[in-house]
Image 1 (cartoon, rainbow, N blue to C red):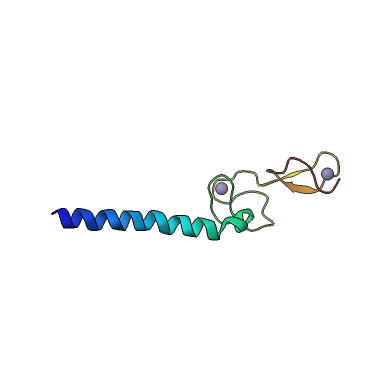
Image 2: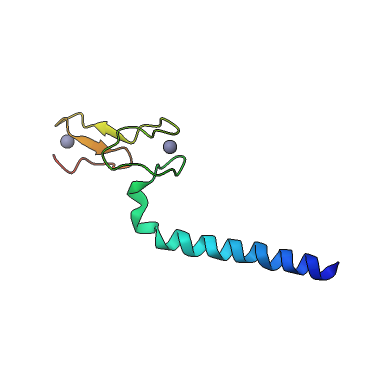
Length: 76
Ligand SMILES: [Zn+2]
Ligand SMILES: [Zn+2]
C-alpha cells in the first residue's frame, strides 16, 4: 500500500515540475494567450473567444488598437 502512495506522490511531483518547465518555455509567448483564462488566442483578436474578455482597446488619443495591459500607447 505504501508503495502505491509513493508512486502517486512521485507522479504528482513530476506533473508539478513538468508544468513549471512548460510555463518557463512559454513565458515569452505570453501575448498569444488570454490574460484572463489563458486560452490560446490569435494576435489580431480583439476579444478572447473563450471568456470574451477584451484583449485590445482603442487608444483615446490616436485611435490605434492597443493591448489592454499596456499603460501607455506606443503610437502616440
Ligand atoms: Zn480568455
Ligand atoms: Zn495612441
